[in-house]
Image 1 (cartoon, rainbow, N blue to C red):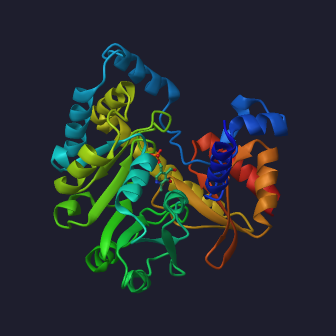
Image 2 (cartoon, rainbow, N blue to C red):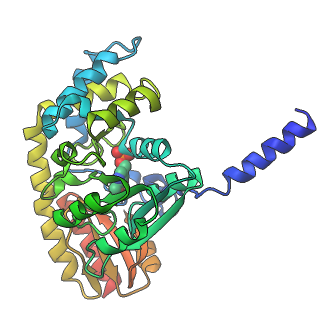
Length: 371
Ligand SMILES: Cc1ncc(COP(=O)(O)O)c(C=O)c1O
């Protein structure tokens, strides 16, 4: 490479390194190696995966799928079939659906497609970190409006900061990491008053009370994103989708998205799970029941305060420094997520609702650490 090209590459790498870095959370292997605990004994509760669906059951579905696919072919029909099935599941026409390789990819695509130097992104604080990550890559301004003390939306604050700006408002509901689903009327007020698109991330909606999906028919500036990673237990397969009026979804699908961004295995698996929703609904209900039990048990530990959740995880505050509690749990083979300060609440952690035996271990460990 000549000197000029070398300089160019060097400056590009410097620019890339100025972007927000995404640090992946600790893995089972990290615990196994650092805490010296066998991998099978590690309790992984740090990424809101759905452990209520057994690995064997999902592998059984995968086996079925393997007989239905042809790996040699691009899967145009597979995409159309899945859009139709999702449309039926959410009660919308199939041309309102955009598929993505996980909802992160769809959110990133929407941000990259609609935002530019002339626009801004507005979101809430605290919320899902990937919005800031995607916006930061574009060099676009990102405003964070803190939630109110009770974790509700500061509608006036959001609308005020949107004055004189155009762009995207990103609302995560149920919100990660606080866990609460926002009031329908508050979200509607934002959709009606915001100068631009409103993206509502409903990754956890199946664990909550209601969805805004049907409102995309009413509001031309509303986009909803959803995923198969949580309620359907397919985080490793990477299938997400967005719902919006057909003008937006067709424009994204035909002009902005890479063709064939989903693989044929994921397409068929998602189709299969939607076809047996009752089976999945049962495990969602089990999870919700366990969530309420876990909430009560966390709150019964001295020095722990857990917050109500509409998702498959719970935010909780500890009296001791959160990093110490995290490390002590880690040493006992339990992985939770470090959160830190949430509004004016110091020392918060987040935990996925695990299977009863996992939650037993968490409660036992947390009781001995916190009291
Ligand atoms: C709020 C929220 N949105 C989106 C995602 C991404 O999910 P996916 O696996 O569909 O990319 C997550 C993952 O944890 C999330 O918490």
